[in-house]
Structures are given as C-alpha cells and as structure tokens.
Image (cartoon, one colour):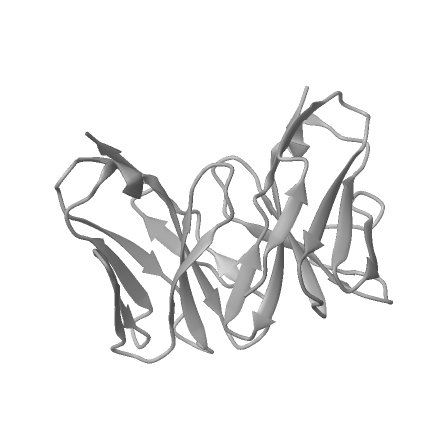
Amino acid sequence: ILNVEQSPQSLHVQEGDSTNFTCSFPSSNFYALHWYRWETAKSPEALFVMTLNGDEKKKGRISATLNTKEGYSYLYIKGSQPEDSATYLCAFTSGTYKYIFGTGTRLKVLA
Amino acid sequence: SAVISQKPSRDICQRGTSLTIQCQVDSQVTMMFWYRQQPGQSLTLIATANQGSEATYESGFVIDKFPISRPNLTFSTLTVSNMSPEDSSIYLCSVEVTERDAFFGQGTRLTVV
C-alpha cells in the first residue's frame, strides 16, 4: 500500500515567520511529487511539480526541495503572510494517473 | 490548463437520501476523477470516469453507492447514494491535462445528518 505522510498536521505561525513542512513518500517507483495549496471553498492550486532528485523550485516566497532516494520533500515559506493561510497538500505519482495524497498541513498565519 | 466548475459547493442532507454532484470542464478531457476527503484523512480516489464507458472504481468503492455518469468529454456527475453520516466529506472532481498537471474543482462539502 502506497502511503504519503505530511507533517505537521497543522501549525500556527506569526506573520513574518518562516516555516516549513515535510512530505514523505515511497522512494520506489517514483515519477513525480506535486505540491498544492488549498484554500477553503476554492480549487487546490498547483504550486510545484518535482521530478528529479535534488530538484529545488521556487515561486515567490515559497520554495520546495526533493529527495527521491530517501523519499521526502520539504516546502518552505519565507516571511509568512496571512494570505498564506491554507492547507498544503503533497501528492505522489508513480507515472500513472493515480495521485496518492497526504493528509495535508493546515497553516494559519496570525497577523 | 483547465477550469472546472463544481456544484453544489456545499450541502446538508438527511440520511437515506442521495446527492448528485456535477463537474463541468471548460475543455474536452479524456479522463475525469472523483476524490473524497473524509475528516482528518487524505484525498482518496473514488473512481475514474471515461466518456462512453463505465467508471473504474478503486478498492473500497462500489458503483451502487457512488454511481457516476460521463455523458460527454466536458461533464461528469457523482451521486452519493443512501447517505449516512460517514459519507460526510469533501468531494472533489479532477482532470489531468498532461501526465504532470491535474486540475481540480472547488469541492463539495457534504454534511449528512
């Protein structure tokens, strides 16, 4: 059974703090690792698609790294803002259409 | 990219009734997917809907409980039948435009009382 785990489940940070979350996934049959940002009542928004070991991607204040050999990815948010409050999902694929999602990390940024 | 309109956004339903969720895509797509997220759990694939054929259900999900229609390449419905409180979840439809890009509807938050 393929399992994707995210930690922490939730966290509260102060505005301006930097934070990071972890996604652990199977290291075998790896094809891609996806990060999504999901706000309540909105569609999950794609942040990154990562495929190569050692990949580092950045989008504004958000960045992500990938280690396929040990099966983990980190998502970093620098200088958190209240608008960053959302659930951050990661999803693993092994080259098929099936996405295996983690339970998400619920971030609340306090002004 | 693809824009998906999902309805309803939320509903509160009585146990024993059924609810049909609709997803409309702004472009033609071969495969549409239906997910469920129960409280505290991860998004889990219910089934894959292809136009012109029966949906393919994942382990633990059956057609009688979650009938799916896919009448054309831009539309699909998922029905949650004979609902119980355990069906209270967020239901999400999705399409995969490329093998690396998936797009999602806004979700349907269902509460069964």
